[in-house]
Length: 182
Image (tube, rainbow, N blue to C red; front, top):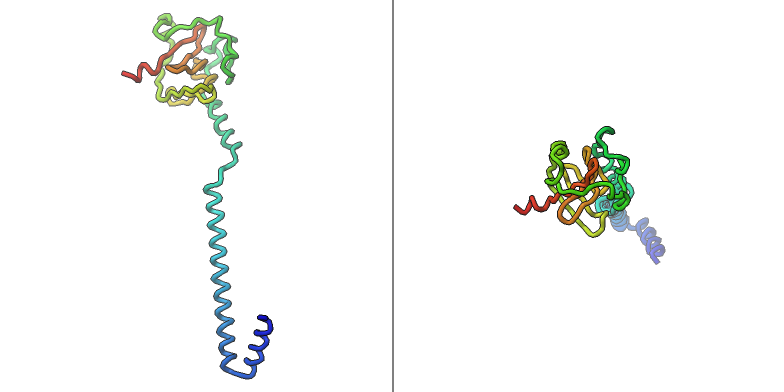
């Protein structure tokens, strides 16, 4: 029906100058409306892209690469200071190391010679969970999980009250929460 109306308007416009002027105004308004609609559409598309970029989660594989790369960046002990072959130099699962040949002692119970060589440790965070994968500590500003090493120490276990480091022939229990409760 609009085709018929357009044809009638054209015929009238050819005969009547007033209608011819109103048709020209209608065309100008239509063009303006189309330009405005184009700008609004473009703005909405740009907003949608920005919102998607901000709120859609990123690929988790890149985040996983970042979190797995962090423990590898920890300083490794020189070969001469590392423990015997019982202790691996790379990250392992809890329970893979047999603690039987090592003597488990509290830090204060270590022989004086071993205690003098034991590095100063400053704990700033201690996270214990039933799931070993969620356990972590921050020691001397470095985040460690079970299986990581710090200097010549190997983090064997994170317990509810502290940590167990392996060094030389010893498993050393350090109760970090006792220090914080003072």
